[in-house]
Image (cartoon, rainbow, N blue to C red; front, top):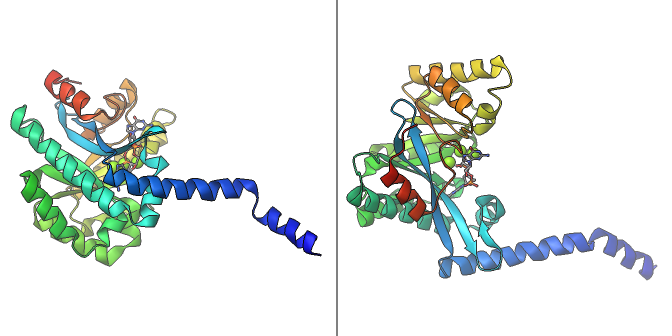
Length: 282
Ligand code: C2E
Ligand code: MG
Ligand code: MG
Ligand code: MG
């Protein structure tokens, strides 16, 4: 009988699961150490004005230079960072670093052309009672103007956390910070409900852009989003622009901004600075 139970236990907790638990624990340990050792980096992907064809600003995207595993993307660690609450200090660091870098670029290069630095905020960050104070301090210490900062909030965050998030959004807006809805179209919110939020930019998820070429209905969907957004006084940014054809279609639809591999992949700060000096026109 004991033998049977022992075997059953073994089956319930097999070696794959054991390896997964160990890997997750290791990741959590590594993440804690990464904060102390300053292993995080911010990469920058240009946001392009489709009307002028020039760079309007950048989205800040977190990377982790892991000592053994190399450069990691958020997909490799952000969910564990959120579950453990470590996203609070990582997110705060990323916001500070992005604001510091943007201010340095604005002071030393073509400052009038770099209008926006856009930073992603996690839902966990919204649950902090001192979020507004933190952001105010970061703007003070880096010298960045509030009007230069844009904060990205996933559509799902707005849908699922109505009241608390709405209050924070209103306060951020009062400070003069711009807000955008990230990954729009994936979070089941209705376009009509958006007028309640003082949002400046709606970022259409790249899954819509990648489907554009395949059938005209998909183009019509984007056209409807752009038209309604404009009626609500909101600008539209297309995420994941990868081809010249997509760019031409988006320009036809009066989509105002674009971002994606067609223009540039996310770059480290040195490469982004080189791009600023090159001042490309699309
Ligand atoms: P996101 O905010 O929607 O960022 C856009 C993602 O799409 C980035 O992935 C970017 O590298 C990728 N991308 C851009 N253009 C293209 C394209 O043309 N084709 C394809 N296939 N992909 C493209 P990344 O950098 O891996 O970031 C993934 C997500 O991690 C972000 O999605 C954002 O939700 C989250 N994230 C990144 N940085 C931060 C941060 O500092 N804080 C928080 N809370 N989340 C972050
Ligand atoms: Mg984003
Ligand atoms: Mg996005
Ligand atoms: Mg996305």
